[in-house]
Each structure stands twice: as structure tokens, then as C-alpha cells.
Length: 192
Image (cartoon, rainbow, N blue to C red):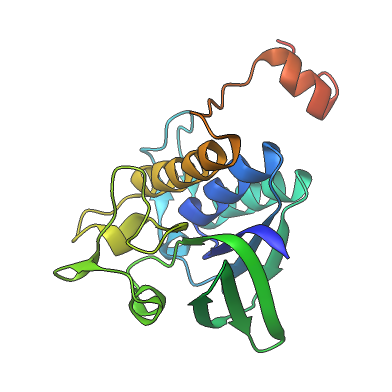
């Protein structure tokens, strides 16, 4: 059992995993590596002048791995069901979770099978990225009609994660790290 199951290993899914894992909730990412980021070159990502999308993903994967995210690389999710939590089904078995983040790009099939409400062709979410199914979140291209970019997707993943953390805390959660946090986690790398 994991706290948060995340289907999709692009910027939104990995951002969600990073935020929840570094703040004390276990995250499992199911990633078929089909993200559009492999076709991208990033010039518009804050803090990055220019980087190939695949290279960026490798950096992000290494970052989530360093926090202990359970990353199931190459594992396809075949079904997701909701009943007192979530069951994520794959060829190698079922995985239970308290929360679900769907970060599958424009593929809205799992959201449809789960019974999420739609607004036209897109999954309906509130500003907190939660779908009509309690504790299930949707991100990126599945919630926007043709308005896609990596920065928005990463922001959606972070928004979903922060709202999960807020539910767990029972109050608004603030994710704001200071250099001492980096020192504690990375052993002095936060120093300038």
C-alpha cells in the first residue's frame, strides 16, 4: 500500500511524486515512458536555459529516486478502480493507494473508466486539480483542451500534491524549503 499512486512519469507525475514524497507521503509512479517530453527541447522552463526533454526527464527521475519514490519504470496501468481508496492494476498485480494522480498526458482513458466527470473532451477538475472522484487528481493535457506545455504540467502535478498534503494535514500545507533543508537532505549542497 502506498499513500499516493501516480500514473504517468512525465513532468506532472514526477512533480507530484517529488512533492508528496519529500513531505512524508509514500509515492509510487507507474511510467511507461511514453511522455511527449522525449520530443521536446526546453527553453521555457524556469531556471533552465536550454535542455533536451529526455535529459531533463533523466534529471527529474534521479531527483525523485533520491527521495525514495517507488518508480515502476516500464509498467503499464491497465485499470484503476475506486473503493475506499484506489486499486491500480498492472500486469504484475494490483497496487493499493489512498490517493490517485492521473498524469497521462492527453490520454483520458483511465479517467473515463474511473468515472470522472468530463467537461466536453477534458477531465473536469477544480483549481485544486481534484476530479469528481474524491482523492483522485488529474493533471496537464487531460484537463486542458490544446493548452499544453511542460511548465503547466509540472505546476498541475505540484498543485495536486500540495492539495493531497493539505488533506493529510487537515490544514493548508505550505511547501517552502530553505537552504538548511537542502543541507539536511543533500549534505551541504544548499550552500552558495
